[in-house]
Length: 592
Image 1 (cartoon, rainbow, N blue to C red):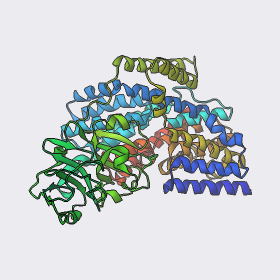
Image 2: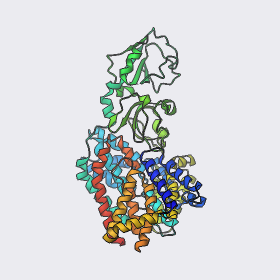
Image 3: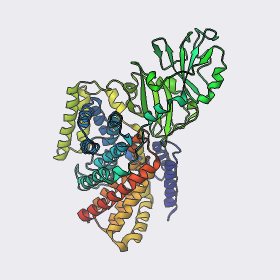
């Protein structure tokens, strides 16, 4: 091994460790490694920045906009809600819901699909007294499997396609991956309707669990005449920065004030509603003029009226709230919402709300104003996954909704018949969407997940460093010496397992970018078609079922379903094994 190879290997191992232990945002970790390669002279500026002009990466950006435009008008959401309501049995409703969902995810980004359908499924389950945990992991898995059917189904497919073009090789056609994607989707659906269904846990949803435990952490105090701060602000009364307690609502006769601002005036007779560690309420009881209402029969449903709503939101991987406590993030003033409870690993964290340091996948139960869902639906800080009794978030022109869907179908046909490349078709679609005012330029900007694009573009630089230093060829030689005597089938199996391990531990796009140079070197050494290796890497990088962190959709359903980490292992491991065996067998048969 040369010094350059050792240096790149050390940097890649360091990068994997940083991604695994979440030392920073994934996009910033990978970007930092590329900057180091650039500064040390290992990569030229052209090589380091090639990913930022890559066709695959730019196609992903355009697809975010197209998917956002389709989702904006709520046509698919409305159709699926009605379709689900017609179901009579649990298994029947699973069939009715998940087969169309797999089809949608072949042509739309899976993240917005899961964000859109999670509240629909949760509400439907709660109305019928069914555990949402029976439906939400399957929702994530079905969208992942459906995404493997087409080139545009996942960002991973487009990234591998873009890399192949960078290497002056022929990329994927629109339906080339369907040879593997359709069979593994069918196998996955059969598994989830039979064995998988029995393995799925029967958890009560987080919101129901919180309502059941409301007495634990909701208390009420009455402002009496002798309270020294009557007709003064909450800030002056010292009720803003309490130890372990949040003032979330003031009930004044028939009026309800929520969220409570620091400038809100306190009046005699106000009922102050607190959430947090009720063990600390004793400190407040000693305050002159505040009386604890021990006979209160208040519950969470009493905290809602026309202007106040309960919302569940999952903290995202790219959230600005990460690694800060709720208090440090100034959550109330930033989002105009109060945090009622925080849920992690199927448990509510029983500590001071303000002191809880947030992590990706944490579910927050929020008391919000009526416009919270509309304002933060596209926020990169979290996924709004459930809002109870809020008005439908999309009441846009249904004609525009159908036009957006029609435009998407037209573009798919132009790519299928070879009239336009995927990139050109999506660029034209975005132009038409903006010119016809189906979306505004501001909305288009909101739909793009810039952190995902930075991660993908930076990962190209890491892949370039592996190829240029000779590390990819050295690793390919090592794999070849292990598997050559056992045949191409075993080498494909090794490649699948390695890619899949990287996907579960880091992210799908990064795993694909790291493994493709090795796959291409292997194909070259074995003198076989590179396409088989490219397909295996695309499928293995997408097939993340064993951990909630490997794929965004798994993280979105983690909190709302009340899942534990081990649930993903228990349900995902058999599915991973089935998908791996099927994929490797089909690729070996078709390409080798």
